Length: 155
Image 1: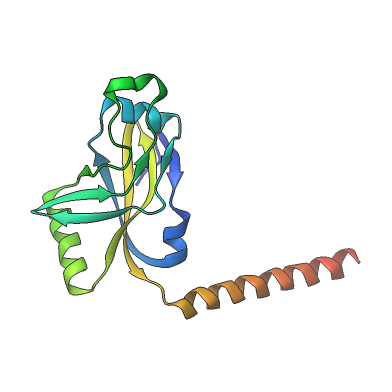
Image 2: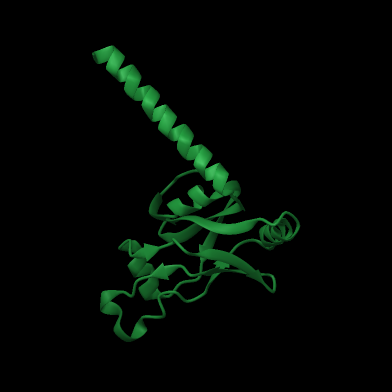
């Protein structure tokens, strides 16, 4: 994927903490005019959102887009279910992976590409508690090593 005209608006940091990302997909989103205006202002939260496949279509649930200030009567429910745009082949592949391997579809980030809002989805496997602890312990150890090296070089 080339990064031409790609501007990340929101990231789902929790997804990388709670899941092993196996594969990534980029999907378009069906939005209203006031929603895209709010997204351009960065007023979006992906934290508790997830994707679900229903009757051959894929939807994003729980994605919060704050109402646009000047939107008044055109504003819609901030957490409404929104349809995602993917090729049929990709939806079938995702459906197969979620059914067979028990994987989940989580949004990783929302970005603007050439003026269009795109959602990067990850085919994810849930991390166990010990995986998270292990990663944290490794990070702490690496930090300690860096600190000791720094002390030795500058001390």
